[in-house]
Image (cartoon, rainbow, N blue to C red; front, side, top):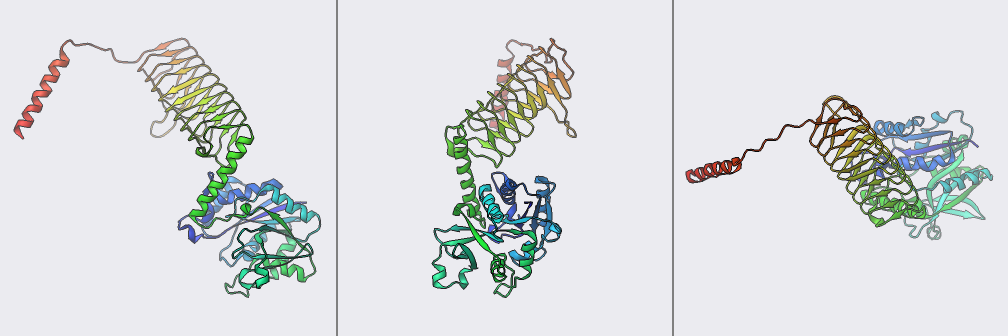
Length: 451
């Protein structure tokens, strides 16, 4: 059965007290709505529609960066969840298959839960609602089930005392045949205090037509919605706890697990060791048997088997470390390939460059890659030895087995096997230091006397 995702992301989120639309706030380096899309991706959807409203241009552009094929629908007026879903109608015109409605501010619905909902549809239910047993039902809508069939959804304000005692609550996530979904929404009214069209009302419309509705349940934690900064922080904590537990289960050593922070897409191979206070930004892959040492920050990079990073290292987007490469303390790598066995161990910046296999980059080396307008490439050959405090003014190359002397400024290519020396000749002037200090002290004394 073909499947379409409809993700509702039009709300302002006034409780966030932010200029950003609520769904643009991030968990684990990705906007809230991206987590819902990632969960829905497990169903291999044929179409995905994001319904935007507040900050529509920003949200839509970000969504297109994540998935160029996503369809953007705009809800000009926020008239309820049912009205929001109807904005996807044109985008799904002629679509033959099921639709699952998700929420851009509810990031933790598991793929397995959505698969269970899809299965319930395949088993014959016309409408499938995701519910959860609430520890404190509070003001959630209640799911009233009779004989295994969902009879109706009752909002708290409309519920009787008996109905309020029900702990099975509505998450808002719904699955149905796409055409049926829109047809049922056409039958939903807005005769309520807010004058809005509510998606859950399709259940009563469906039951009145003799259609079937059922409930699939999930853990309450999956339904956590984000409405405030406090809830956003709590959700980040939930994500990080899950990610850490998953890494440990995959055979990764986390020496101080509560100090390691993962992005939504971090991949780490087994038998790798992550030391304390490491932060992974988006787009990081670390292969098996690597070691990421304390206080390092990685984003948009690839670390191969047996490589060592840090401590206090920064790998920026485009950094590629081959097997057994070493990047040491206070080193920054950006858009550069560090080939097998190469070492950049101390206080260096390597950007827009290639460092050949088993090359050694001395402390304080800088690739001067930016001229104020454009970036330029530095190429360092295999087994080259770059002396401490070398400046490589790109574009420039240093050949295989070549060497640069300490303190050299390299402004032209160095042939394989050659040595580049580019520093001023040192002179020693006997007694000059004593004379200079005496002069400086005398000058200082005169100034103090005059004041």
